[in-house]
Length: 151
Ligand SMILES: [Cu+2]
Image (cartoon, rainbow, N blue to C red; front, side, top):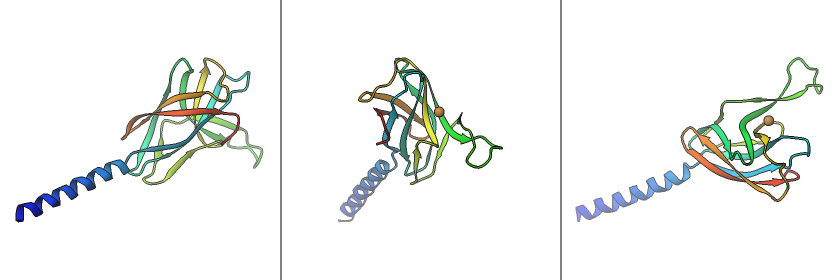
């Protein structure tokens, strides 16, 4: 009698641990890339990341057949410019902190993944793959549809 109760306890514990592990996974949603203008050789990828247990995005990569380089970028307004007159520039960032349970949006005007030295222009209807690297969760391949405008 006593041993069977112990067994039930262990089974419940195992189920709880499994569910917890699933919930801790980093989730990526809403990925898209804007079509590249004819003369541009770089394009931004936008997406939303949720890390229930907290994590950090530390790297991005892309198939060289798509683009020679991928970086994490942040759009910033140049300092010293008058309000509303600031020149928008982009700078590379080493990582993006993902606070536990909060969704971090990589969106126009903020963080984005930059694909540079495109091998071919991106056209609407295409899907490309990028690989995100997280400090805790490791690597994740994300499918990115190419769209003319924000979804
Ligand atoms: Cu950029």
